[in-house]
Length: 116
Image 1 (cartoon, rainbow, N blue to C red):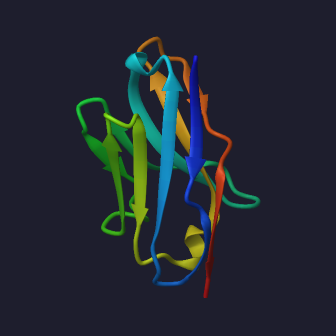
Image 2 (cartoon, rainbow, N blue to C red):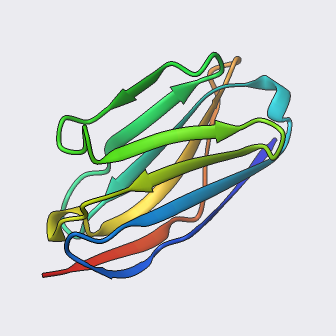
C-alpha cells in the first residue's frame, strides 16, 4: 500500500504562487508515476501534471508555462509549483500515484482558492 499526504493549499490572490507537496510512504518502490489532479465544484476531476519515475513530465494545456511538477526522491515527495495563479485554478488538488501493478492511490486533497 501507498499513503499520500498533500499539503500547501490555501487562499491566494490572482497572480500569486503556491507550492503543493505530496509526501508518499509505504510501498514507494513500486510507484512508476505520480500526478496532480484537480476538481472544481460541479466539474470532473482533471489531470494537471504528471511525472514518471525517470522524470518525464506532462502538463494540461491550461497550466503549461505556469505550473511545474518535480520530485525529490530522497524525501519521497512530489511538488507542484503553481505561479501566476488564476481564479479558474481554484479547486481541490489531489495527489495520485500509480504502481507498476497498475493500482493507484489518491491523497485526501488540498484546497486551492484563487481570489480575483
